[in-house]
Image (cartoon, rainbow, N blue to C red; front, side, top):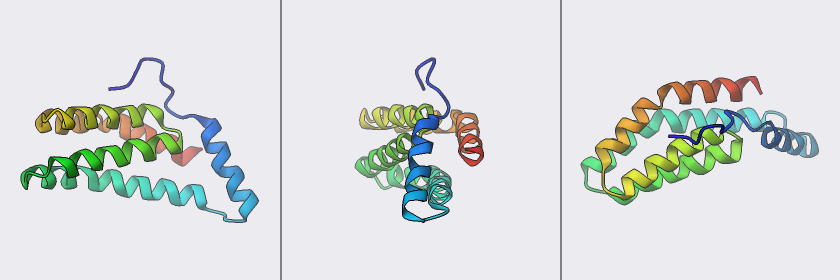
Length: 119
Protein backbone atom coordinates (compact mmCIF):
# COMPACT_ATOMS: atom_id res chain seq x y z
CA UNK A 1 0.00 0.00 0.00
CA UNK A 2 2.62 2.51 1.01
CA UNK A 3 6.31 2.19 1.60
CA UNK A 4 7.32 1.85 5.23
CA UNK A 5 8.52 5.15 6.54
CA UNK A 6 6.46 7.23 4.10
CA UNK A 7 5.27 10.18 6.16
CA UNK A 8 1.55 10.75 6.46
CA UNK A 9 2.00 14.45 5.65
CA UNK A 10 4.84 16.37 4.03
CA UNK A 11 4.58 19.70 5.80
CA UNK A 12 7.00 21.26 3.30
CA UNK A 13 4.44 20.92 0.51
CA UNK A 14 1.70 22.30 2.74
CA UNK A 15 3.92 25.24 3.62
CA UNK A 16 4.55 25.92 -0.08
CA UNK A 17 0.81 26.08 -0.75
CA UNK A 18 0.34 28.32 2.27
CA UNK A 19 3.07 30.59 0.90
CA UNK A 20 1.18 30.85 -2.40
CA UNK A 21 -1.94 31.75 -0.41
CA UNK A 22 -0.09 34.60 1.28
CA UNK A 23 1.65 35.79 -1.88
CA UNK A 24 -1.54 35.89 -3.93
CA UNK A 25 -3.91 36.98 -1.19
CA UNK A 26 -6.05 33.91 -1.88
CA UNK A 27 -6.97 32.93 1.66
CA UNK A 28 -8.54 29.51 1.81
CA UNK A 29 -6.69 28.13 -1.21
CA UNK A 30 -5.31 25.17 0.73
CA UNK A 31 -8.65 24.51 2.43
CA UNK A 32 -10.29 24.50 -1.00
CA UNK A 33 -7.80 21.96 -2.28
CA UNK A 34 -8.45 19.76 0.75
CA UNK A 35 -12.22 20.03 0.29
CA UNK A 36 -11.85 19.08 -3.40
CA UNK A 37 -9.67 16.11 -2.49
CA UNK A 38 -12.22 14.97 0.09
CA UNK A 39 -15.03 15.18 -2.48
CA UNK A 40 -12.94 13.29 -5.03
CA UNK A 41 -12.13 10.58 -2.48
CA UNK A 42 -15.82 10.22 -1.64
CA UNK A 43 -16.70 9.90 -5.32
CA UNK A 44 -13.86 7.52 -6.19
CA UNK A 45 -15.40 4.22 -5.04
CA UNK A 46 -18.66 4.58 -6.94
CA UNK A 47 -16.95 6.09 -10.02
CA UNK A 48 -14.36 3.30 -10.12
CA UNK A 49 -17.05 0.62 -9.74
CA UNK A 50 -19.17 2.23 -12.45
CA UNK A 51 -16.23 2.39 -14.86
CA UNK A 52 -15.45 -1.28 -14.23
CA UNK A 53 -19.12 -2.26 -14.62
CA UNK A 54 -19.32 -0.65 -18.05
CA UNK A 55 -16.02 -2.27 -19.07
CA UNK A 56 -14.05 0.98 -19.13
CA UNK A 57 -10.83 -0.07 -17.46
CA UNK A 58 -9.06 3.02 -18.78
CA UNK A 59 -11.48 5.29 -16.91
CA UNK A 60 -10.89 3.29 -13.73
CA UNK A 61 -7.12 3.68 -14.14
CA UNK A 62 -7.47 7.43 -14.84
CA UNK A 63 -9.57 7.91 -11.69
CA UNK A 64 -6.84 6.31 -9.56
CA UNK A 65 -4.12 8.23 -11.40
CA UNK A 66 -5.80 11.60 -10.75
CA UNK A 67 -6.09 10.89 -7.03
CA UNK A 68 -2.48 9.70 -6.89
CA UNK A 69 -1.35 13.04 -8.27
CA UNK A 70 -3.68 15.16 -6.15
CA UNK A 71 -2.59 13.42 -2.97
CA UNK A 72 1.08 13.80 -3.75
CA UNK A 73 0.69 17.47 -4.67
CA UNK A 74 -1.03 18.17 -1.35
CA UNK A 75 1.67 16.38 0.62
CA UNK A 76 -0.08 13.16 1.61
CA UNK A 77 2.43 10.84 -0.05
CA UNK A 78 1.33 7.66 1.72
CA UNK A 79 -2.18 8.23 0.37
CA UNK A 80 -0.71 8.95 -3.05
CA UNK A 81 1.11 5.64 -2.81
CA UNK A 82 -2.17 3.87 -2.07
CA UNK A 83 -3.66 5.27 -5.26
CA UNK A 84 -0.48 4.41 -7.19
CA UNK A 85 -0.96 0.84 -6.04
CA UNK A 86 -4.65 0.93 -7.01
CA UNK A 87 -3.69 2.36 -10.41
CA UNK A 88 -1.09 -0.36 -11.02
CA UNK A 89 -3.52 -3.08 -9.97
CA UNK A 90 -6.26 -1.67 -12.20
CA UNK A 91 -3.83 -1.44 -15.14
CA UNK A 92 -3.12 -5.14 -14.64
CA UNK A 93 -6.86 -5.76 -15.01
CA UNK A 94 -7.47 -6.91 -11.44
CA UNK A 95 -10.29 -4.50 -10.67
CA UNK A 96 -11.61 -6.51 -7.73
CA UNK A 97 -8.21 -6.31 -6.03
CA UNK A 98 -8.03 -2.58 -6.79
CA UNK A 99 -11.42 -2.04 -5.16
CA UNK A 100 -10.32 -4.10 -2.13
CA UNK A 101 -7.19 -1.96 -1.80
CA UNK A 102 -9.38 1.15 -1.78
CA UNK A 103 -11.69 -0.29 0.89
CA UNK A 104 -8.74 -1.53 2.95
CA UNK A 105 -7.21 1.96 2.73
CA UNK A 106 -10.14 3.61 4.52
CA UNK A 107 -8.10 4.16 7.68
CA UNK A 108 -5.24 5.75 5.75
CA UNK A 109 -7.69 7.96 3.88
CA UNK A 110 -9.25 9.12 7.14
CA UNK A 111 -5.90 9.77 8.83
CA UNK A 112 -4.59 11.63 5.78
CA UNK A 113 -7.64 13.89 5.57
CA UNK A 114 -7.41 14.59 9.31
CA UNK A 115 -3.75 15.52 8.90
CA UNK A 116 -4.57 17.86 6.03
CA UNK A 117 -7.36 19.52 7.98
CA UNK A 118 -5.00 20.14 10.91
CA UNK A 119 -2.18 21.43 8.68
